[in-house]
Length: 477
Image (tube, rainbow, N blue to C red; front, top):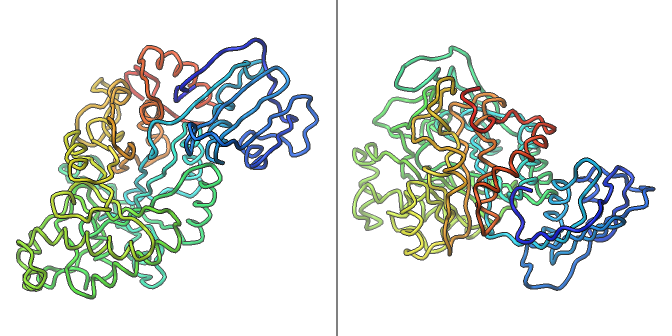
């Protein structure tokens, strides 16, 4: 089982899990969907779901009891029942499910995976496949990175040029941005609001919350290509960025630009019911603000220390608007240096030290240090490994060994997609390291040797699901 359960007591015999098994109790229909069983099964065995008043299980804990004739899953909430069903799925093998008693409670409340669809648009079918994979491994957050310099993927009905123009680029980097090579192939795509609502519902049925991210005020060149008035009058109009890396262009600080951002967040919040909305806030280059008379006026009127403080102004403006919508802003830890509001969740990415810094400042924190959770980094420097973004090597063992510590809201893996244009490349970078992150986020104890043994037994299930993972200790694709 991955992630490892808190307690496992083996029994004698096996329970045959076949299509005719009856499922009863609350949320039985959802369980049948996950297990692939018939609504009117005729097998002698039965799976019984039950809600119990047990505070020690929390919001997502469960118990699972398997005997030769019956499976009982108990939890305080529907979420716990779903995780019990996922454990049952993983336990199933030749001859059925081994009899046992399981008690399991997750370590962290936020167990996330960020998927970047801004650099390479992915079909909804791809996202649904990954929702299934996340749910199988008990991740409960899909952080969907919808916009960046290289593409805008979210339909905004009040600003249609965002997808008419911003969702398409003329070509893409072929290799590292510094190489100056391009593939000469146009790339584009976006999601309608209806498609995203359907994805949200699909994920919710599997216990996964989709947290959307719209990048403001940096990483916004695609938006400025669609609406040049979002940029600065001193610069030439821009196109959707074709190279990787970070654009020097940032949103201006006019009332019109602020109103645009509010419009986007209004429509975003209407589509995504998530309590949390990610507003970006990372890698903002301040050169345009430093040269802008309009920015200077905003600095003076707001009593800010200087142009760099406009990042904090943007963060507070967006967080205030989301608060009025009943939502809570999440931002990358760059915002921590610019007086963010107390209720902003900080996603600590620039290093392990940023986790502690955000905690000291009194924020809820999602641990996402690039050294341990950026799965777009290469897994090995051995010959034959595919080209990956520049960064430190991140082995399976390094990912598994990360401990986010106490006091954090949770932890998250990141899959930035500049170098992952196909599902095969995406799978290769994602798995099996996502298995390691899943266990680090769910399980309190860690044993690398035991994990490696269980991973070997788990890989055939990934094979069945069509995952083109990197085999541990491979020397290449």
